[in-house]
Amino acid sequence: MSDLLPEQSAIWQYLEDKILTVLQSYGYREIRFPILENTELFKRSIGEVTDIVEKEMYTFADRNDESVTLRPEGTAGCVRASEQNGLLYNQIQRLWYRGPMFRYERPQKGRLRQFHQFGAEVFGLQGPDIDAELITMTARLWRDLGISEHLTLQLNSLGTAACRATYREALVVYLSAYKEQLDADSQRRLDTNPLRILDSKSPQTQDILADAPKLDEFLDEESQAHFAQLCGLLDAAGVAYEINHKLVRGLDYYGKTVFEWVTDALGAQGTVCAGGRYDGLVEQLGGKPTPAVGFGLGEERLALLLDAVGAVPDSVGRHLDAYLVAVGDVSTAALLMSEDLRSKCPKLRLQNHCGGGSFKNQLKKADRSGADIALILGEDEAQAGRLTIKYLRQSKDQVTVSLDEAVALLNKA
Image (tube, one colour):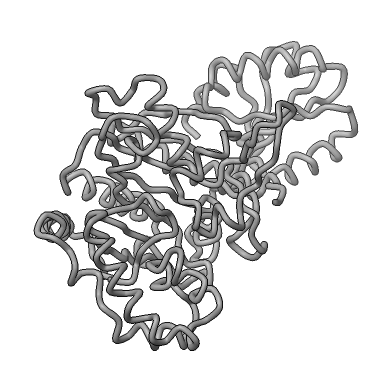
């Protein structure tokens, strides 16, 4: 868990504005739900034998001795809120959310115990066209941020529950012959969640998996057709991808489409955005059968990526356009003039000098503030309803103008 200081917050604000613009351009609407949820929600959705539930959740008993958990991800809470509030009854919903998530992990670059996530979820559509929309929407975001060349889309199909059950049996039979050679986590998962072994980071385990049965060989016709149509749509849209048959995701609710956007610019924590289809989750949590698909993207990692590849515009972090310098007994006039300027120049970012001080000292503070211009108000200017504009970043002569002329100049800037 870490603090976010003003310089970093400026990057996040830039990032969030870009994300919101894209989400809203596709017609997605915001939903907000609690940070604290009943623990059972995550056990039922994520899966009791996943690493998240077994090792990583912040869970405790409240004063009523009920088990509650700080949300480790957003999809389960979004499904619960949507189902309980009647949003999913014979309706198509495109929703987005953002906020902090919590997992007890070993802190490192790009992986914190409190992290921030944007999520988008779609309910009521089962075709590959909506899967393609979500993926192309993220591709558009990368283009808008100027980082497309640093991200690669990995794609897979997990098929239906029946497909996965058949594949799971074949995988267990194969891996059981090599059990003693598997890494410790994979040995444990062999009896609980064998598909997660495909995602093992152990080189020796990956060598063993090289000749293991492949999930795509067990897909039924429906799953094959869905995946082929999705790939065709992405091809038509010009979205490049790599098919990764070992991509399984760490949450039990996924089926059919799964995807990740990964980068090699951040070291080990290379996944920036991930998602997929979870057609059975709404019913699993007490609702009616409802097809669903979505993704989550981590703000910390995305901000790190922007910084790592130099994609943060120079203008980000510059929080002031003008700094008002008040010389002499003009504090009242300075206050009123600055309020008038803010009313007439809605986009103007103006800071008043407070606390007195010499003219020279105030100009130094104006320069250090990062503002483009200093607005100088002395007693003579105040009486005449005028002010002086001094350019701090350009080699222009300062000018003394009326308030209306100042408004015109500031609105053009």
